[in-house]
Length: 387
Image (cartoon, rainbow, N blue to C red; front, side, top):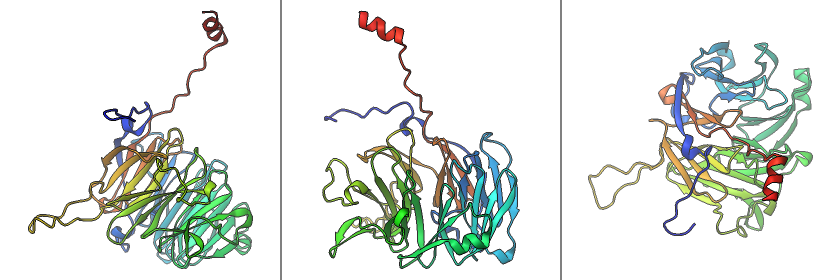
């Protein structure tokens, strides 16, 4: 793009479509400090278009076909089960399957259509989970990953047969499966990301930057978001929340072993921001990446002793970037308090933001409907050739 030129954005780009829709009442359990809510905020969006979320220790579901429809209670968790911690919906093979996990390690697999628990078991400290078809991966507070085959009807047998690996030295905070279902990335509270090939799951892949003669994928802050690019090479994007309130988005090229040293200089591999990254989502229909952000860091103004510290420019905002160039598309302030996490709709057009300190789930339009280019008929093609 030359000097004085402005980028043009397609009709379904976030540049033209980001706007608030409505809000839904939401809360984390009263014994949980809302400021500590992370990307693991208990919300999920099923392929049957039901939003699943918590109000304290009650679990609700709401059809998103009608924006204003009432939420229905699915279940109330007993005090002995601990606090609702995680909610995750399965993929296209199981459009009505949802799983929830509690702080005391109770895990329940639900059939949303039948509104009943299909399987349940207990484990220690679940902290992140993600489906890959019928395979369910759960990371825990000690750094262990477990892969469960949910097609096994007997819970005890499924738990016994689960594949288990421990390589992280701290709480697993984020998980993401690649589109082809072969690779899973896991991030932890120490800023380390590991990538695993499920076909040889015992050892993580040697990927990332060279650190003391070994490849490593490392952030400064805790990993709070992971996302695989669904349509452009083998790119993994990661986001963190650093102790000083800042955040960094990093781009790893798996086709190049994740090493950024030989990357095209026009494609940045690192974006340093003045606010925590709390979630990342790719649009399925356009080359854009969305990030959500927390309150951010305060910057002192050294020349003005009595001046108020400068607020983060992207605090509590939705930010959209072109990918892989990471050019800015739009920034919209979406909340007054911390956006703790978010979930993207099955059609990739809307997002729901979890804002526990405002007791709200905020529904936003982000991307417009993708229209397939109209194919020219044989008659039109022939007439063009004649001309």
